[in-house]
Image (cartoon, rainbow, N blue to C red; front, side):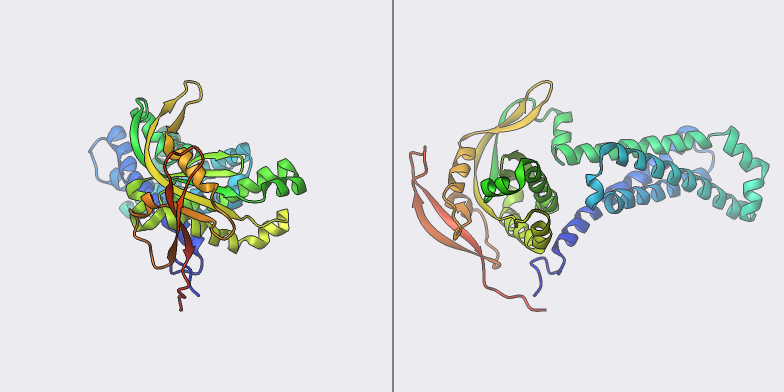
Length: 365
């Protein structure tokens, strides 16, 4: 039976898709920043330096994509900061030095009809290595790579869309926005903590977040907060309702955990189980704090989503408000069951809820 993405390895497909988009951005940056160096160092006197720096920029972009999206992923991301830091310095310094050296030698081989050894030992190339801008070229490339990686890491740490919002001042003045809110609650937390302790539970929680991150990003969601045993996700209404992204996220999270259930059981003795709620409405969003600024959402929508979560149970573990359900075209992969109106604690008006479940449709190869 095929997974819902049409590929047996759903998680890998989601990860590859996001990495491919980022790799395209890196290639574009390499095509621009490489020749830019020639403009400042050699001007427009010859076409050859532009070709060389373009090739160097593209090769460097491919190397960065390989290191960041293939090598520095998975369990490697969990290494201590200083270990990854020094590993990056070594790999990038070596790779960039080797790339610039090889491109410059091969370029001279074609232009001067010389072999590799002759080019390398020539007075002109030795002069370039030791007395011209070879070292400066390495430092320029290394500096640009460092800046690009730094931006990529900051984006990942504080959220893909938050960084540029901070820089542009988008969040400085509070404003009303419309957002979809999902509360995901990890079940049996008290029992798990009693059995494995709070330190191991923290690792358990971190492993869950680590495993579901790619799915959330792929479906255009944002991690908003981690509160005890709850994970709060946020969507722009257009992105969240598009292809039912906010709904697909929860079911695909369950698929990921199901695929890794033996790993969790062997490591912790428990398999993660979730309840979730979905609601949407208008919130006040803004930047708060000076020393440690955060982007916060305030409004009744948050409280309502939390109250809906309180109505979930083992039979109906994923609930959505009728207000949001009206804005989503439900894929045939899932079905909804009307549960009726509920009087939520602290709410003057009843709210109609639906339970979302997987349909019984089978997908055959």
